Length: 413
Image (cartoon, rainbow, N blue to C red; front, side, top):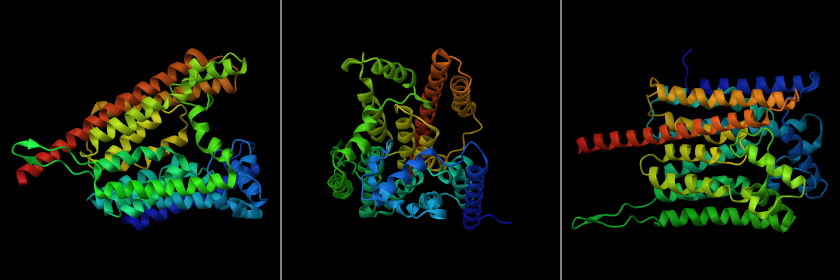
């Protein structure tokens, strides 16, 4: 059978249906449930809204009320409870469609488009995450919708999707500087002197205004409905959170000790580094990388800055990998360097360090063995170093490919 976009999407749909049906079986027959614990948080919050109460009455609900509103059909009972999973899988498929469309816009050959899109559409980790009831696919679809609109020249749609994605989960704001640089105008050379680049072009200002208006309108509306609880749980919490469990982050061990001090009443302001951890994170992902790489290749830049943002996050779980996995095909679209050992070494470190961390986490959580330090700390450190190594490769390759393209253009000229 010849594989084309339609066949690939059909296989993707069938896989998701299969995972979904298996999840229903596991939830009914096995002690360990398939459904993500967060899905119960979402649906409980939806119940509270249906009862004309605040979704934040549900402990640990730390999302915009829009998510709970989307899941109101789950409150009808019976099979309606599965509505959210089906919705998330549809957004998951939409993400795959947008990957295909963006690859088409970037002149990627059809065979390569299908291979690269399959990294998302046929990826068991991606399918598992959405079919278990994680909402990450909504964000992925919105981010890719903003990129697709930008490349098509539809600034209004880009700003709308970007503003909505920022309202849902803050971090897509790192893409705004990248898009501003992309829309900038290089300075002209006059009398041998190059004028300054004009960053805030008409389109860039329009994008900022639309994204800002969308974000502010939704945020003000939610604040009007649910007050300070909305701001505290949806946004402020993520700047000060301390979460040392199930966390690949380099901050893992430090957060554990800070949490211990907090329980003992010994924590002081000088130790509140969790409030400032976002500074290096945003410095690299939202300023340095966009400024240095955007004009070389915007889609690769978006992938790299997301990869770095996740790496420097205080909390890293497997679900966070979805944030950059949906952008990975754009980095790989014109890359042919996987026969070289540095890439394989980085991939081995990336996956191996996760396996090592999970092993020690299992020993700690289920066997009761003291592996938090130095074992878990060592695994998290190896994961961090491996990701830094991969980041260096990503930047180097993107720069090299851009320079090669420039040389080809110069020869044609």
